[in-house]
Length: 550
Image (cartoon, rainbow, N blue to C red; front, side, top):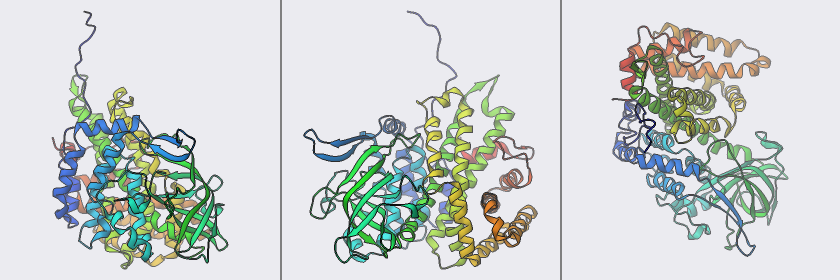
């Protein structure tokens, strides 16, 4: 028996904890939003997610990714994607919480915040399963405008049962809905789409069509139906395209291949061809882009929440590791430079969580108030631009805390790092988001000024916040329209940082808010890399205990 070494000073990934109970920042945000009623169920959800077995299942779902079975043994086309059982476990777990329809089932106060919290918790453990969940949720307000169709689908959309069977809609207890927009030649330029829709009768809203063409990214092809963009004589239009025709035959949506992706491996993305597939027109003929962009508004919110969840889990794993790992005679969390890194990660994560919860409140309060409309229409794409990018940086920095242990596939951090970029790309990359911010301001300038007015109230007497607010107003009002587009990223970044700073000043302890403001708005050297933080005057122990109670 040869014994070359013993195992010591190794720290396992953090598990067997309650993902919500250990997050005081999220619990406080739920209470402020009036969502206390949801906390018992969310605590139970957090306990299930935090089990070591759940982490193991998440690893399995991503290691054994989806596989395409295009034909059966006798050559019949089936276009089915097969998944590891762990994938189905996560979809069933999420569906069972009622989070898919929670925001639309009632008018109960705090429902959007409760949804955001559940989404945030789930995404920390297994993010890929949130893709079909997001699209299904986001299609509900679009389908509600089609009274006859929605009446047939309501029960299946709102169901808490998980039904993975590949059957016609009439035989299902619940359903999932995906999206089909992107084509090879167009990408984000949806007006360049070439898929054609030919009426099978009179056509028009609610009419039957035959679709012929392709989609370069067809999200979650095993969904029971998709919202698809296709061109009619009037222009791009939106269609409801199920996997099965009403007559019970397979709709000819041919999966060409599954995408081999950097991350989001548990979830299937595909290329498909429509070989005269059957569909129903949603919305007005030629108005498909505005119809489906309404859906995208909700999915962009979920990108922000999902990225904030990645940040939170990366912080939790890094902080746990640093508290247990010994190096150079001390625990990592006691080393001054490491403490600066951990404190900076905690500031970033808290600011992202506060922003996502404020956005959720705006979606709940509706678009009637100009300021709430601006949080939805202007701040959401700005937040998607900024928070999703910061998730990539933060997860990479957290991986460094673990060193080589963070870089191996057996650990949580490598998966988080691979997963993070998808939210920056899906539903519009950075430039698209910034252009959308500028478009929203141009179309609704009164909403933009209402947003800045609210931020001014939140800023109170803080000189740094009021100074940055004045600079943003000046940039908004004095920059010639011809020059403003080139400043889109600068404006979106500054707008989000100001909003986060204002929210931190309202809801975080004073020294925590001051540290965020100093590092993000005042010190040109801070914020460029995590840990370049002047920690003098920051109660780091209190900050880290707030981030993850010991």
